[in-house]
Amino acid sequence: MNIKPSEVLTMGILACALCGTGIMGIIFGTIGKKKVRQYLAENNGMTCGQVTAGSITSKVGFILGIVMTCFWVIYIAVIVGAIAFAIAQ
Image (cartoon, rainbow, N blue to C red; front, top):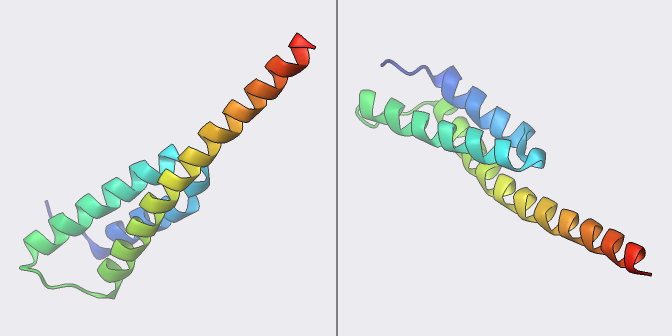
């Protein structure tokens, strides 16, 4: 399939940039990690700076995406609870 190093880096950057939305960080982090594996398989494990940076940013975006998803779920639960409490008063 011939994965380019810039594709790996782009997915990693998108994962980090969109991790605040939660799910998008997880999605792009997963795609980035998949592209790293494909690139390494095609090039017999040989790597370059863009692939290394893409791998790191994909992992960071994936982890931050999980953290932000948990944050948003808790945040929404608190808001819904506060509204329900205010209505009950």
